[in-house]
Length: 155
Image (cartoon, rainbow, N blue to C red; front, side, top):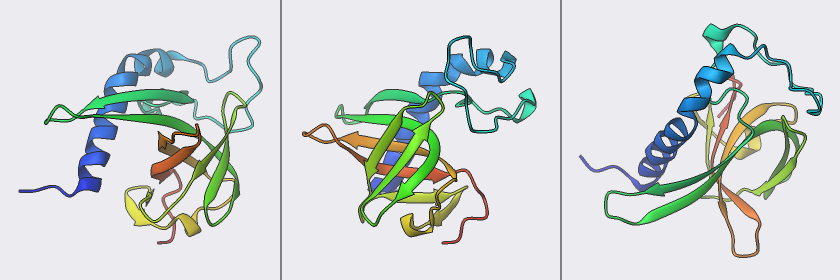
């Protein structure tokens, strides 16, 4: 069985994130949901029920260095937050720590609404999403995979 390139990227990225932040899940599950002293106040309503918290709960950024079976490597950035603006070629969002990030969006960007395929044009301002991005030579980011948290996203 042969996996397409995007499936390999998705599996590798998901595995890397789970391994990277797996240790944080235990601490995040025990957290009360309130930001630590001195942290900027969050405008995003966070779940407080530990049984509904996933391994990326509270994670705002991560740098992934993934190695493929053939020895080649892939470097990705993970960011999560609420979409604040969207154009045909980019999406800007604010992370829980208050950082504002803009990622480029192109025809190669994979977009998922929950677990369903979607289009970047269907993403709406105010929705929460996770972004896996590649850093370009000029320092900008291009989204490889965007997963919107809202399950009712239209394709």
